[in-house]
Image 1 (tube, one colour):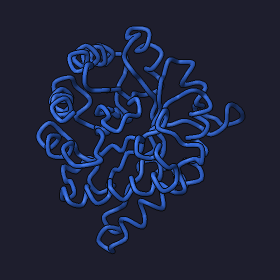
Image 2 (tube, helix red, strand yellow):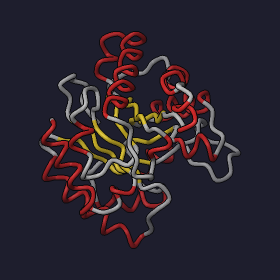
Image 3 (cartoon, one colour):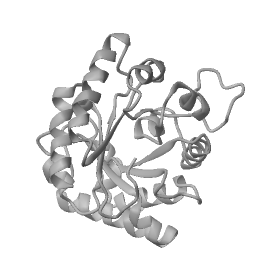
Length: 255
């Protein structure tokens, strides 16, 4: 994860979602090997299916791998769930929480996400909290209200730049190839930054704010040049080294 300096290194994170079996371990290794070429100036990581974390980390002792969600409880009668402690035990260094696909598909609330983030931090994991508005909310002029509300309610009170990042992902841009205007991205990231500073003081300046939502090798240079865009949360373009590399290259140039 970024070290907290405001002239911070870009942080590029791949989210494999529900993709990947043992046959894809070689691609994870290829991505990790490719990423070493940019490690001097760019931090990167992959959030992969929980079923692959142990096998992948045993092969890649020095590359950052993470989960895509965790439960808010350490253990218990939660069939099918994975705790933050389990992720850490498997070798994960970080996890996503609050992705829109879980907020919508699993009916997760801001309170749920806050609890998950705190549980992950307690387990020693870095955390990326995802926030973002739907197209209907943006068209209704509610984007700032919705996203800032999610940040306020999803981020724990003890948040700090040593363990937390925020990923702004407009829901309507995820996997669609559409992205907001650069002025809209700049406005949202600045508003999130202002809220973090108002709440956490100087440390709020150093919490990384990533942009997610159809970032790829073509649009990454423009998006990563926007003030307060400290990196990217990448979906489909992170599934292969060939597609992921141009984004790391753009991040290196913008650092």
